[in-house]
Length: 290
Image (cartoon, rainbow, N blue to C red; front, side, top):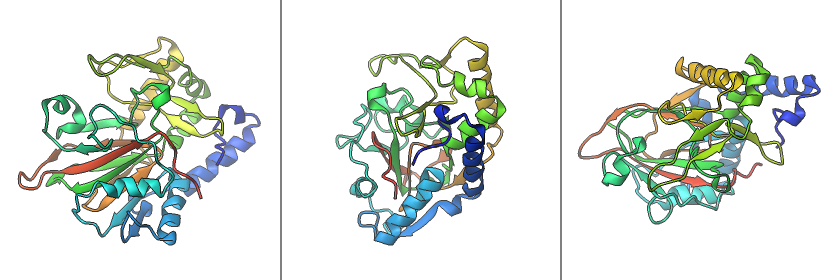
């Protein structure tokens, strides 16, 4: 699938407009449109797999609702990923030994320094925005084992929507966020080196990748007017109950499989006897299309 949003595609303008109009017309207006009922994510039927991939083609993401309930088997997200063409897990330093992260509040003091491992809200971001290019996160699976007693809702947004809305607002802003030093994430002691790179980039097939965080502390933007204006535009747009954002609360047995879409999490309160637990598996591949 070649994206007409690629900068090489900009002239002639009419082709970009055709892609833009098709994208907006097909884009889901409610999160329920993303949901696919599956019997067991570890063994999808041909019809279930097709339904998931159709939604990914439409919005770069799908939500599955399974009969697994609160089954703690970590093979659930891994097996689902394999059936979608995802094999190379990112063994990040906070992941479990198998490369899958157990996302829960509290736990080790090392993890507790990072927002995902607390009950605090998480701002808009794509996963692995601090990774070097050779470890670019192109897809992830987020699987719910236990939901929070209150809160913990997720919002999802296709990066292609962010790209086209930014491009519509000012093409110079879109170009600015494609520059190699557009956004820099400073080094974190003992965890990672500083990483500079673009917010938006396109691979050899013209497929879009977005590297972004809405956090304001320790994020450095290139000091030029277009980059600064583009960063303000995205931050404002995403803070105003972002149009096209899809909101849902994952229940046990539900999950998201996506090409690293923008997402947030609201604050939550746990049931002490049954604390919130999600598994997150990050991959270097994109989901294999139909």
